[in-house]
Image (cartoon, rainbow, N blue to C red; front, side):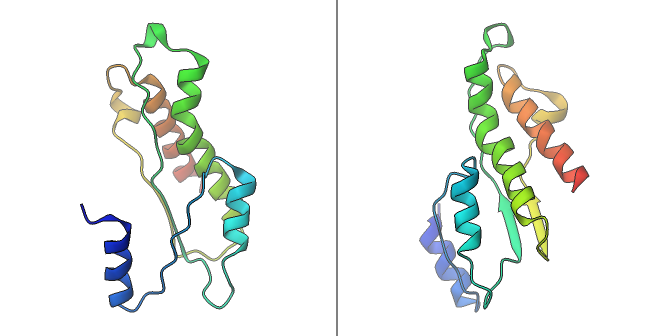
Length: 125
C-alpha cells in the first residue's frame, strides 16, 4: 500500500498542490469548515467521496444502530458534500459505490442501501 504520503509525493511530483485534511464527512459543520478553509488562489476543483463502513448483520437482526453505522459516512457525507459544493464550479464529483446496491450481499443490507443512495445522488447530481 502506498499510503497518503506516497500519493501526496507522487501528485506533487507531477506539479499538483496537495493538502490532506482529516474530517468526518458526516459532521456537516466540520466539513463546511474544511471547505471554507480552501483558499480562492487554488479553488476546490474535484471532490472524491470514498468513505464507507460495513456493519455485517443478517437482515433479520438489522437494527437502527446497525443501519446508521452503514449510512453515516457514506450517505450523510455524500449529501453534505453535494450540498456544500452545489454552487461551485467543480471538474468532477466522484462517488464510490458498490455493486451491492444492485445485487445485494449477504449480511450487508445497510451497505447495499447506502450504495443505492449514492447511486441516486449521482443520478440526481
